[in-house]
Length: 156
Image 1 (cartoon, helix red, strand yellow):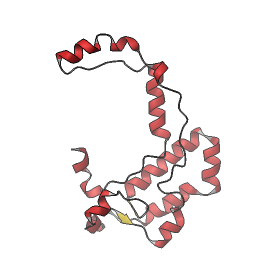
Image 2 (tube, rainbow, N blue to C red):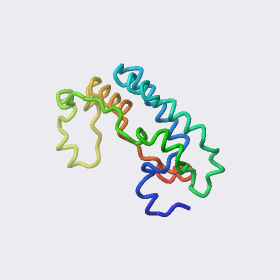
Image 3 (cartoon, helix red, strand yellow):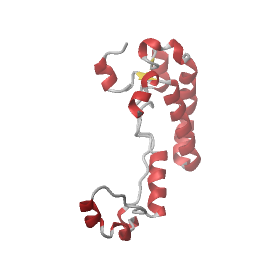
Image 4 (tube, rainbow, N blue to C red):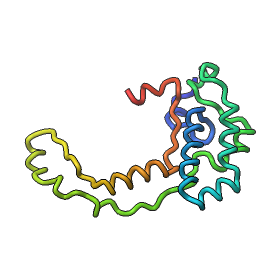
């Protein structure tokens, strides 16, 4: 098994998983379809093809028991995607969300807080929610790989 210290650091640039690389490919395709500049960059460097090539090298999960499903990069994998893997290829430039808050949703929040647990519904306008969703879909800065064989432990 992997050392606890290595697991705590995340996969970094040395390990990945089939589902993580598949996610990366899908996200890059999503961003490229919406941003011509990113699409040109990805095409120029054949980034998606490189990720797909490494993804095809990863054996089935049951063959990766020693590492709980993580794939240790081989030299050819690093040569293919080392310059692009776990890098912020695209970070959107969002508008401030504050003007998109629904101030009425916070009416009486102090009193409700003192009474115990409560929820604030509709605090964000549809425009704010759309922007947050877009930020999460398009940002390539979220990239820690979890171990596939034990992922359920992270999410309950």
